[in-house]
Structures are given as structure tokens and as C-alpha cells.
Image 1 (cartoon, rainbow, N blue to C red):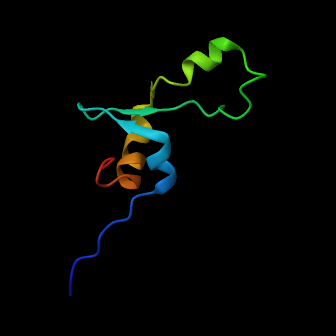
Image 2 (image 1 turned 135 degrees about the horizontal axis):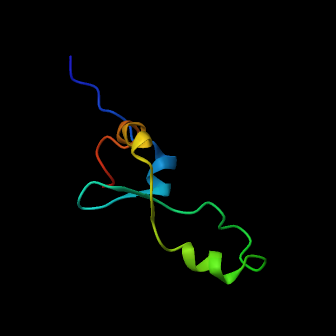
Length: 68
């Protein structure tokens, strides 16, 4: 019987990025209504922010093959 493939969590795939060194970066969650947000928070949207090491194991399970 063939081995089962693990499925990538599609929500995690859209929200997180894996760097070349293996670190996980996350996007900010407040992207909806751009008109009513301060420009300071709008500038932070494009940048990735590092996640805590405690959540790394959970993300490795959600993204078993990285972001392909």
C-alpha cells in the first residue's frame, strides 16, 4: 500500500513565509479596510514579522513541504 502524502494547510500557506535559513515569518492580520488605518500600520503590512519559537513545531506540521 502506498504511503499517504501529508496535506498542506492552505490557510497557513497564505499567511506565512519560510526564509532560506528556515525561519517562519508572518503577515499582519489587519488588511481589510485600508482607508481607515494609519499609514504606519499600512507600511508594516508588506513586511514579515518573525513568529515565536514555540509555534514553530505547529507550523512545520501545517506546512510539511515548505511553501512550494
